[in-house]
Length: 422
Image 1 (cartoon, rainbow, N blue to C red):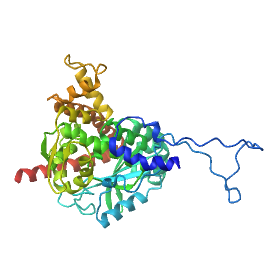
Image 2 (cartoon, rainbow, N blue to C red):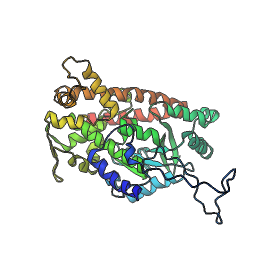
Image 3 (tube, rainbow, N blue to C red):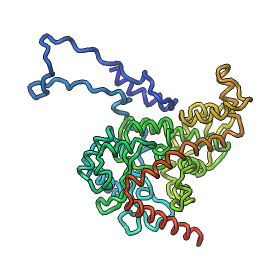
Image 4 (cartoon, rainbow, N blue to C red):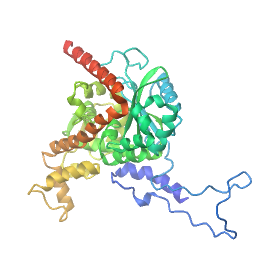
């Protein structure tokens, strides 16, 4: 009864505060069950669970699990619709993997339309690649099973060194291993593998913004997980709070969407290379505005001091220091640490220990706060994006890396030429 009560109250508590603390509050966990009574006939090992012995299975530790389920309506903004054919294609591809996947989503131009592509169909010639992200429980175990089932997905060097090597490379920040240029069901796909723990950590704290930044944009969830859905709702609300702190008292919904989309691109080293379209943020938002609105509208209007009528594209917010301080205090821990660290070196900054209210109000009222936030975001993104680019040489191998880079440069050149002509 207590567990059900907590399960019902938790979404309400999250919706009210959406705290971005790194550790889950102990109050969210149900109390542990009472210890079993001592056995009158102790044995060296438990009896096997059979039809004649329907005893409960041994208790499994749920140390990393917030809760086993959520109400179906919680986080419904995350479930964006796609066409039936796209849904069937995405679900069919994920179902072909024997290794257990706890959470999976598809993203990018192969799922939601973007400017800059002659066709949005992944099965068409010149169509976009389908991008997937899989969150698993144990990376080594997952790659061992997948390497046995799909050895061609991995380069020769990775197959020779085995799944333990792949898992160790995956662990390096930002904690993702990619298999790219893979043919399945008549389309070319790229899929990343990470752990649920790493994914949720980035969603809550913006440790690297590599995964959380991807999930700021429209995605199609294929396999759901309660813990990820909960932390993703925190991630989306953090994106709104961060954007509001960098926007004026009145702005358009397109400005909001572009600001949020740009968080994970500013500072990304790939944007310095001739392989990424400089207008990528605009290309995404122009075609995906309805999906962005579905993703963010309910979260925005739930925040105090923000006014966004359902049928309007203009948003107004209270930009007083007091209102902005409420957003500032709830920024993801990694971003907030960087912001407060920059102010700590300024002699005009009041003591946080003396009066927290004065401290946060002073920081929130600083006209230079948006610039500081932008610089900190760039700093968070820069190193992990550089490391992941180098990791791509290992995970893809020299042949696939060259082929993938060539195709990216070709698409960038075609996009730049089309933009120049227009």
